[in-house]
Image (cartoon, rainbow over all chains, first blue to last red; front, side, top):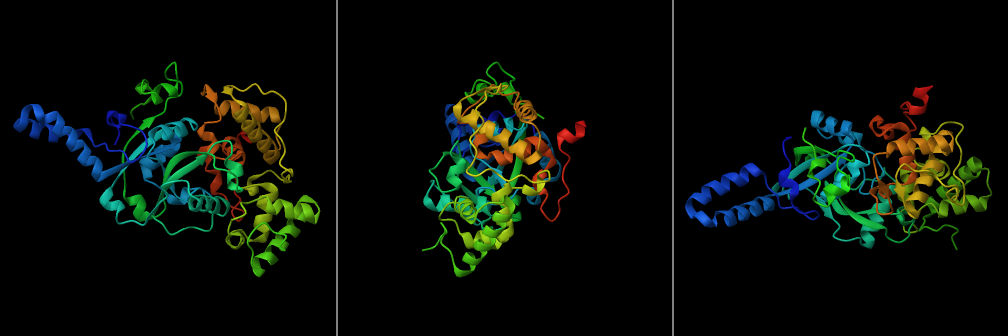
Length: 223
Length: 183
């Protein structure tokens, strides 16, 4: 855990295909000795292969919340109820979204990965779009926290925007983000904490926007 | 024809009538207003039987009248205005740039915080400004819109790290609000 997060400069959104720098270097060195100039290409292929094996998830939280997770792991008992997909631990595959959420709490982003082989053993509900089924699911969970579903993991759109309150009462869809929530011990155990990064408020002239545009890596700290 | 906006059963009809009586009592309002408060509280396609099973008529009524996490509010509890109050018209000197949507939303946070914790609007504004003073701008695309004003009112008032949401009506040990610490 800890250390640089240079490997996280990959694109935003979707299931990200990024591997650890150490593995990447090993593959590149071995293959490079044999094939010479073709090594970079093969190294990139190696990176993609590792991306196939893992999915990365980001969790934005307060500094104290991040410290608690580093110290004691994820405690599902500390979750709020009445969240979009029910009581659980919430992450996103959208790095920028996690950064913004952490910034609203003056906090950190924790970076996790989960092996796809582990995910395949879990009961995963995926909403690929903001369907009527998704809207009904979110409204039910937001209104009544005691009625939990039986999924280990739920993934799908995250409603936000000025119309969110009206949406919960049956109105039109607000803007959307992405969220993946983890609801059971087996689900939590599939998450491996890789590293964390402080979201330093206004660390650059353009503040957090500098990071989001790709120019402000300095707003990410190490711990 | 049912007076309820939801798909009901005989059982949920009875429970909704119980909830309406509680709403009338808490809000000192007419039966018509109580029914309207209940009918406008949720999406029409909500599983109202499930909601009533989870919260009961009394719990449902209290949430509609006082808002989520009503047990954290300072007594005597003040009911939410109905219809929903418009944000106050006065200009607010926010510590960050806003647009019309975020200005209205943040005023909603202020109204909610003032109602729940019975503190002045100016103190609420000060708390909101202090909470997000590091931001240059909050606009209608901001992720704070992923939560409702009720949530931000509590989160800013108590502080996120207090884990204020872990208290329940049956275990009402409350975290100490910042304002009380200062006194």
